[in-house]
Image 1 (spheres, each protein chain N blue to C red):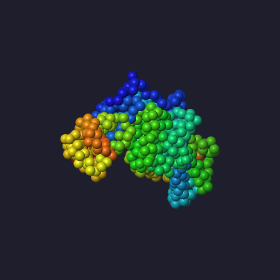
Image 2 (image 1 turned 90 degrees about the vertical axis):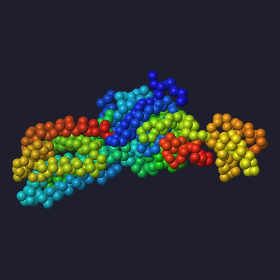
Image 3 (image 1 turned 45 degrees about the horizontal axis):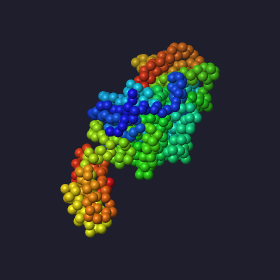
Image 4 (image 1 turned 120 degrees about the horizontal axis):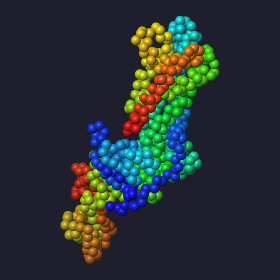
Length: 273
Length: 322
């Protein structure tokens, strides 16, 4: 047995950790930038916030729009756009869970987890980076719809407010995707599970059609469906009309998503070997 | 007061029906290298992940610099660097960006992070590739970048989980030099490996793990002695002296010597004085020798003995020259 060196292990790092919340934000910011660099390097990862919503918009306006809108495609587009926005922004979070899942498989997160940073920093960073994707989605969808003939009936400030509410919704809803990304085995499974969730939510709602024609039991679902209320807010803000009730519902759902899925995601992240 | 940089006590960890660790203990004094040796699935990586705060042990405890890896995980993370079995570099980020990110996360100032990243890229021969995405790197380059990333914070304790698996011999030697440099700078290193030669080259002490248990712990030399006799080899200059050398070796060891193709002979010896006796006897008879050596058994033989692999045992395997 060799001699035991009687000295303390030097801490090595010459760092002076500043105030905690500020530090955590800076770490999350650095990790958000990492995710953005990845997005820039792989532009095809933006298909779900660019081409995909445009396809939905074209599909529903020109193929189903005539039938659904009783022959009046342009007023159907007015009705449809807020719905497509809500659906797309809910789907946009799916890739977040997929990316987290593949990052974990590659071992990149082992490095982060062995660093003296908040356990939540990599997750918060990934979510923050998604803000940029949602902004792109908003710009793309508004531009495409405007070219197709959509016109905001209210003004710039209500439109910005609609963007703000959609963003808040997306940033809370995406924690479901984060959670799923941490508990399933493959990125493909994340997508499968999330579509299973988002598709019934977006079709079982007022996104595409007036819900009055749906059977009673389905209307109960539609009434509590978070996407229904988000669409209600966006429609009200862009086309005019009351938003208070839908806004309250949406705020409630945002709180529920955050209160339930942020802790679940963090717990799953800590457990994931 | 801290006397060991790394301490593990009775670590147990179960995954489903697999008992990955079944009571593993070891200590590493500061500034030393411990080689954790074992075949695939022995539990080496699990042990490292517990020590690096990535996994919680089911039972037992571990301390890094006296800090408990579960209770003081946050402080432990300030003192450790981890290089995993699979190079965990970010493929979309450049080499420089990878290291800058770690620097930022370690609260280095922008300037310090840049300087440290530059130093490490230089040291690991990656300066030319610094602005290329790590996804374009070769396997060896990724390993080096991964190791560089684990050293950004100048950790006092470095975990290297199979750092040379899959590297060609030149790259492996370069990696060994890095480990020696780290130790020279005062870091404590825990190195897992499947390669006996690697542990022999780098480690001050070796802990052999199999099926989640420590089956041996010793210095490389002690481990070899523990597992078998040494082999004395004598090659005379003049082949005509071969029969004399043979009878002489037979007298020294009491065993029948084995003839070697170059006219020499070798025999297992247990007596510590065998070499001196042989030299004196050769001098008495005036026999000139071109080679006279005492070989320890190879670590492969040692490992075979310890894990009771039936294919070879130290008494029957007489591989010449390790």
